[in-house]
Length: 207
Image 1 (cartoon, rainbow, N blue to C red):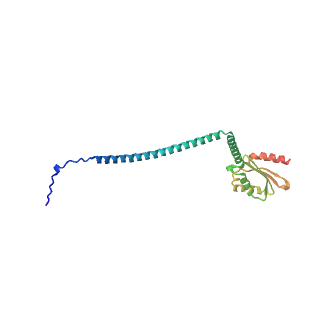
Image 2: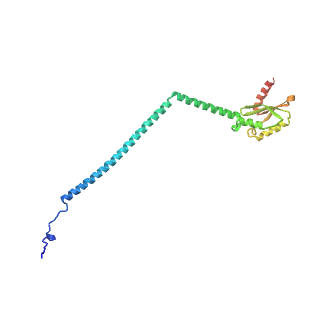
Image 3: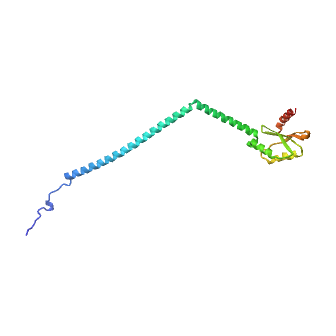
């Protein structure tokens, strides 16, 4: 029968150090690997940022070049004498058309009534006993010249003017009434300012 005796009690066992050479090498290796991985990640991130920065700078340069080209084109266009002449010509045409429009508006009556509307309303005042021979418009003053075989219809014809927007606000009056035999009664009605012109014109025509 064999009997074993433990001659190394805890107090008598030799001391062993925790940081051995193998552990030191392993720890250092792990640290080196971690530092390498961190350096690699930082390098990749920095490279990406540099690439993005370079792309942004290149785009900014392209935009600046394009802007300069457009500015140069604009300056060249502004300094183009033929283009400036065309612009001046268009401006003169617009100014002339605006003046003509204002003159037409003054000529054709109040409230910017067109001459076609005025003629349409005059023709709409239909009376078989009255026929017009002349329509005169001068400085917004309307004068009408004609004949009638029924003089009593002339006030009725004038009263119908109040039914039409281009005629109702015009101060018409009778300026001249003349009996002309078979042609009936010759009349001139309209604004007072034009009565002299119409009378003179009709007198010269008669002579």
